[in-house]
Image: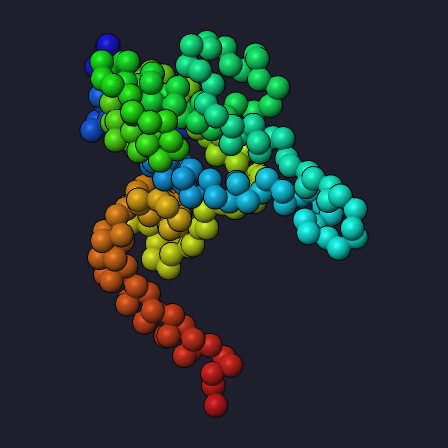
Length: 240
Ligand SMILES: [Zn+2]
Ligand SMILES: [Zn+2]
């Protein structure tokens, strides 16, 4: 590897130049942040997904008093497929054989297996959404240095988007009052997103811990507030 060639994040939709401290990685820290957020979100989405099985059915309610046999509540097959048992990992081309979306556990379990094999370790003993997302999160620093991180990113992103589309639940984003501390940014682009470890700038991609943001906000917000009060006090409407 030529040390002078600027390396870029392997995730095609990103492609940011990797900073010096990221030079051992294939994907940048913002993409890592995104993947970690998805891995934390997935277990939270599972009960919502299960609850979505019948939601759009519109069939007769169970326990109706008509006296006729109760019609089965229609279940969403796409949701059933997603919640279905993991396909055997010996199936190398599950996408071709499936009639619906690949089960969540098949995707997560196959990636956990892939990672474990790559590291020469044992995969999680039991394939659950929690164990597989936990395993992937724990070994993410290793995965981030591998070229296949782009595929993992793409498959997880697609999976999360499909689930969000069904549950109609997305992590909430809250805009924060302090401007981005990046000297080349300074925009009001900082957001806090549910289940994310860091506050991020939607403009420049900078990541901040909560403590870093709080320190920064404590330094910049009081002068900004004073300025706002001065402006308000000097507007024409304020004249007696
Ligand atoms: Zn990236
Ligand atoms: Zn910024």
